[in-house]
Image 1 (cartoon, each protein chain N blue to C red):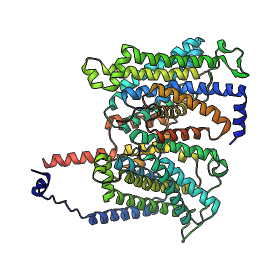
Image 2: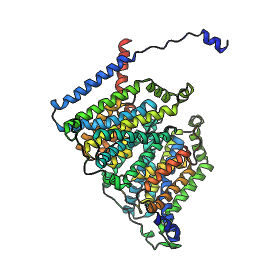
Image 3: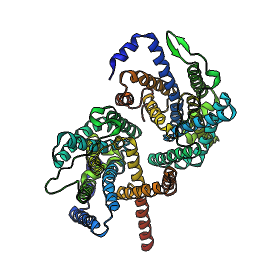
Length: 339
Length: 300
């Protein structure tokens, strides 16, 4: 039997048609509900600390979730994702300090800069595999960090951008007001998460999963792996940059630590803590890490030991992130109930 | 940028000698750390992210031993021996549990220990800068070579590191243990099927890597200041070295370490603020042109 005949005889497999629309509406609904809850939070709890905490969660959460697009969905372990966080903070801060444009303009311009930088760095990095990809991204991160340190006239060197970032009001929104900043951060977080969710659930998102599982096969069926990886690298960089901008607005400055490799390390850690198999895992990890950090630093000066032991518990004890664990537990329970 | 300083240094033999020796010192210390890293990666296939901690412990062990006994040789022995034992325990108790897991888990376990070790050192020795001081035997007038100043301790340091490189290279290439280690790197299942305890080899290689890093720390203790975070910058630099030289290659580690050492010492003249940046730039250039490093094998 020739291949042609075999092809004629074979049944045409009908692809299961999943209507994507209900899910999209569900996501939109959840996002709206989350935003309403977050927006109502200040009316219930007036504490400044809680609002600050949520703003920090928004900044780190966007960053960590965007890293998960690379690590969890595409299998690209980037150790330099923090450079885009730093780039966002510095780009936005410098734009506001030096040029005096309005906030939305600076926002878009920073995204444009991030786009160009990420496209150039990504074009160099994404053809490398696994551990080498991790190292080159780390090297670029440190290159940007040393550039920030040595370009003192522009960036203020190791002192960072000082003197505050001007936050002129626009369209009735005054970001120097804590409540306005809070609402704006929440809006950016929810919109960012919704967009990333759309990317992850789109056909392109499934292409990424395929590249993660079997890049050879993906390229065999005609997918340009390099282009797909570069696309997601740039997209993830844009969201990380937004996280950096929220951070710059929050602290009203930018510091070299924002571009240091530890930010990338924390991002990876957050992903592991929350779990990389669910979309919201990194968000859960962000909240966990920030709570952990805040409580531990208040209780003891040796917070490295405590944090280290917690990490060991997750890495050696659970061997997976919290959300992975919860999802598996539910799946097992459901199986137990059915059988 | 100060290119005039760099140019005038190249014109003067005295400056050339001084800068080259300081580059060699940096390079040799980096080599000792990096060769352990590359050895562990070659055999165990894990990237030991906590390797800098062993360097740090080596320095602190040596300082304490020197303060207690007053003997420089004993200090070196304690630095190297103590970290070897630490490496063995660390590998058997923790790292061996995550060999099957993915790279992220291994990195996380190491990351956890970087945090823990730094705090342990802070608890025992305190957070402030410490210094071991130059041993009396080396407090002699420096040598002058072509007008350049070369302290005798530098010669000892270079000698010890070179000796370690030669012993390691010959040991791996010629002895039976070396052959077993290379075989285990190539095909651990086969080696274990032949009745050799691979767990012991893994532990031994990790201990050897830790010992070399500890020796580097002990050798560096008289000439550098000791702080709880001191392992970190060394770790990053030795990563660059192994990546430039090629993961798993000892010759690559040596060449890479010397290149980085020289870039650092001459770069600090020409680009005082961008010295670190130069190293990363060099790493990017090497990796982009040869993704597996200068002496790395092609990835399968």
